[in-house]
Length: 100
Picture (tube, rainbow, N blue to C red):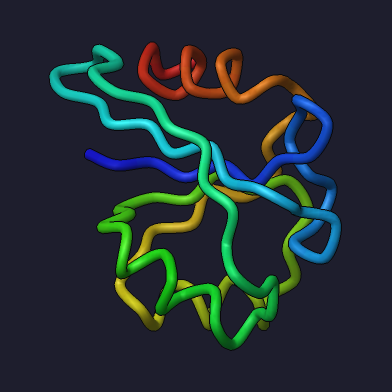
């Protein structure tokens, strides 16, 4: 499973417009296998789903996202987990893979 987390300054970005990079994590059987930091070419909502698809993202974990943003991403077949707390990507992934 490949998970994306939008972040800025080492923490979850408050919104997509604040996001400068994505932390991309590959997990297998609840273990982190690979991690990478990617910078999208443009941070426009209408381009984001395609960019996430190009990087084979299955799930995106976000903090504050409006229904329109969530819908656009879900239409691309990417699961959206919204309402995540303001934590580091590592902390968020740990909570996600341990179901906490």
